[in-house]
Length: 116
Length: 110
Image (tube, rainbow over all chains, first blue to last red; front, side):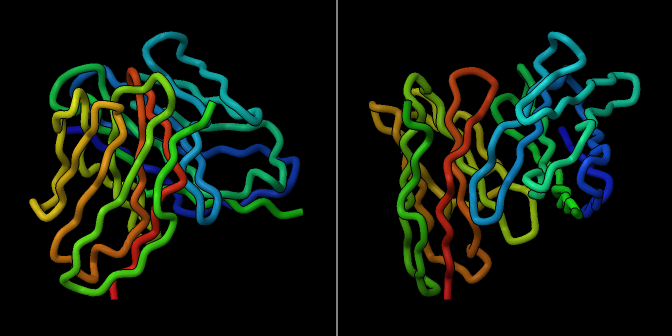
């Protein structure tokens, strides 16, 4: 079985400040990890993904994440927050094989608020 | 290149009714997955279709069923609707491991 824990259901930062959204996962097989962003009343947009290549992954809109196997973490960062980053962010895990193949398991989400 | 499309965008039903939601995948994608997202929660996996067969299924009752057509589009059917089925239903398409989501169908059951 796989699971994802997102620490902090709400994160608030000032415009221009560092954004750090935390994600820890549990998986019995090598994982594939994803971050998605959801704006109000919309679907999910892929920000970035880790699929067993480089451990530091760069995504859209200046976001990046680092896969740390020893810490079972995949935290999302952005050096400088912009007002347009305000949204809900979801971390998700799946695997290349096994019983979880093809099934994305999501965390509960983190709502990011950006203050001017 | 059109992304994943879903119809309808919104739907209101009453308890006990049946509903069908539709999804068209991105061009070149052969796999369709369905998720239910209740208010304030992360999406929950319902099932996945590949080559017109259900390949994976999450922890949802048999009231939830689906279909995939030869052109890879898909339908999600829910029978005997309950109030608790009110949610945003998301469709995602993929060719390999990365799933791309549509805008969703918001279902309200009264």
